[in-house]
Length: 319
Image (cartoon, rainbow, N blue to C red; front, top):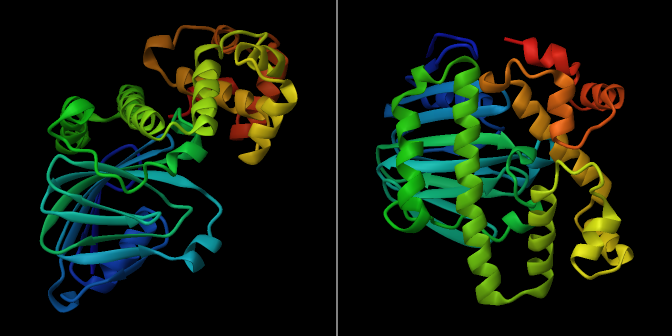
């Protein structure tokens, strides 16, 4: 049977499964639908502790050996697309996606994408922390992230040595991640993750010298640096990179979006984050919008509601 304590996103939720059938169900409900298998099903035992902060799920998993598989059939039934970041806390994990394999030891990190098949296996008792979040919360181009899925990021060297300890502490302090301050900490964690993988992408671009990927990376960085400029648009971006606006639009068409839609979505995500930031609680909604390039308050309110199902003020006041 499954024992559940402290249900609800306002507190830490704990799930204890004493059967493999219960564990299989709990895993799919906590993350995305997954196929789960184990050679130790008869004696299996697992525990999950989780906290949901806005659109970010922070989940600590402790269990015996088993394998989870995200199959094409399960993906076809899903509409939401997430990244999942795993930080190995104890034991060893093996992640396979996009024809890459990462073997994770304590402190190591890896990211994977729920919209493509993957397999994650553990050969013995283990403990891991998983951050699951929508594409839009990672400030990196989705089309570039396919280059770094299932790539082991060592926790004892480079940027991993700086970032891994912070993420490990999240697992040890889930109870402290409450309210607006908890959400701010979770977003700070994603900022660190963005920095980590931006560094990995820069290394890949430098090593491979792929001019197409390099250009997309530079355009992305330019957009991120200028989101607050109301004049930011295709003409300005194209001119800054010495390309035609037609070439720019073609680049974005290749990744199934438009320049305007990409800018708008990134601005909305920044506004959404600021509206839940306790440090900015006294700042008027119009000032939050203007900070990220929305000069028409009524227009901002309409597109915010269309994107997130609530007005900016209503979203800010949600518990």
